[in-house]
Image (tube, rainbow, N blue to C red):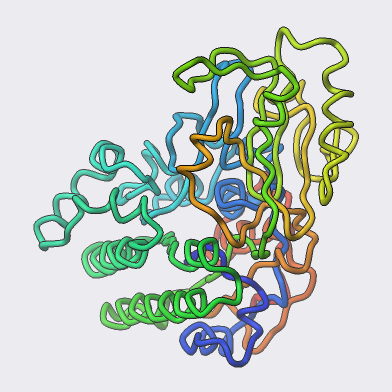
Length: 422
């Protein structure tokens, strides 16, 4: 399973896109016209769905960033900065239980997972890499002269994400050459980073697309060199599409204006009676202890008056694949949904905003928007040739991969992509 973060369905369909490797792979197998993400359509909920086949309401990863009422704190799934685990069985659990070996390179939500013996989770801080990456693999990569000590720095800056992806590729090549797993998960980030920074149709994003396509080619070559190419099925996908943005709403600044967030003289949060967790095209809004009884209605009206914003409450959550607040302590009382061209942050002060990156494109919006559709291609043993799949959901990937592995995933909500299977 290869995730090219931010691979849009429209890019995979574009005959002029610089993706000869991916186009050739799709040409000898099946591809989706478009794959619908989950909501919010951001990396951590989407990747968790890709390995579980269930919605965020079931697996519990409700955003890259959330606020957990029970813990009384912000929880960042982003960068695997939390010990909150996936709440349901995963593909790696099933493979491990069946006696198969698993490798995961830069894959979200793999911190501390014992079922993955060759594991470099997706972090942004070097100390987390040093603490949680599989020790044997880490030592082997270092002994080969690979600069694993740069993983954190190269992960943090978008400009150096190509070097991070190169490290991820080299780790994957090493695992394929030394102890090929039954299931391998590889995650490349450059395309996502460059679309955020420069825009969807920018020359930089086009270069990034060509770059990750070349990385995919090197990975496929590693399987050829190991004599495993013809016996391996490759499932390559994006986790969401992208839209360009022109307007940013800093939701917690609005809550400060409403007298619901307090900041001390040093710029630290000193009190919360409400909080917003921004996730690009979506945001959770939490009404907390100490807020007036009318706060939810007041915030529904305040945020609903913003151009390009729809405010959703618990009556809409089930249809979005989200739980009700009473079912999960990290679910917002309200969910803000942006139209294309708009985005949210959770930044609470002007100082934080000034230091933050400026995104020219983002995701997180309603997954039913055509622009948010992700690419999906699969080829190899068990996959039919020259098939185009219609109406594909991200929920469908995990049960299909399980079937290709000769396993099942009983708890999955998605359907088997039977038309793709030989």
